Length: 317
Image 1 (tube, helix red, strand yellow):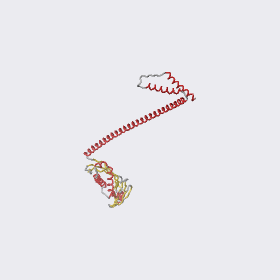
Image 2 (cartoon, one colour):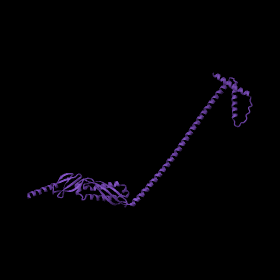
Image 3 (cartoon, helix red, strand yellow):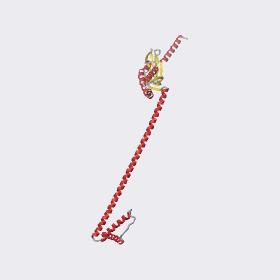
Image 4 (cartoon, helix red, strand yellow):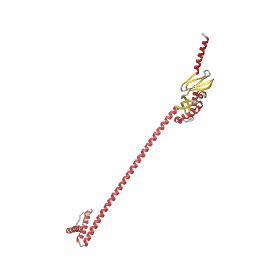
């Protein structure tokens, strides 16, 4: 075989390998750092790129998508000396590939240890009750601290979440008994409040009933007084009319006497006679009545009354 041909083949293969080594394809969601003789030179973003073979090389391959780190379980001593187990998760995203590649060694390990340290610091400054009731506050405080500490590394911590808080079993039992006692207390308070409201409503109802009864009695007394007043008024009217009638009769008799009519005198005598008989007849103490009188005189008096009434009617006509 000709030496020149072999040399050409070797040179061709070398050129093909060199060209292959110079071609770089970066997938979506990734960024590559390029180093020239060990020093950072550029960042290749997703797509097709060319580098100088044997001079440039790919330094770090960084995932630019949001990533999740599990924070392993650890024991934390709270402010009131309670031992609790805690674990969580951290969400972060690389924003600056060169900083994430060259500002910190083992990026994920650094984020994990920073989160665990601050987790113990934040939770250790709180009581157990606060720890169990203010989980959102703990998440926000951890996020603020960890994100601020990792900013120089070219990453953004988006969320820090506490997955689980595990108090000791004896504390869990104590809290269960305390919760039960608190619920029993609230139930007793609500029951007492219900009885109190019932008594108040009952007393209010009785009071309203008494008020309504008093109002009814008052209205009844008013109506009764009004009726008595109306009866007295009508009785007075009747007596007034009777007095007017007697006055007119007396006037007529007086006029008749002045004219010499003896029948008028008979009228007065008969009238008084009849009144006397009526009183004697209605008296409860009298059982027997003697009438020493002449029947003819009484009839004559009654006749005089009739004659007097006839003349009065004729005079009006």
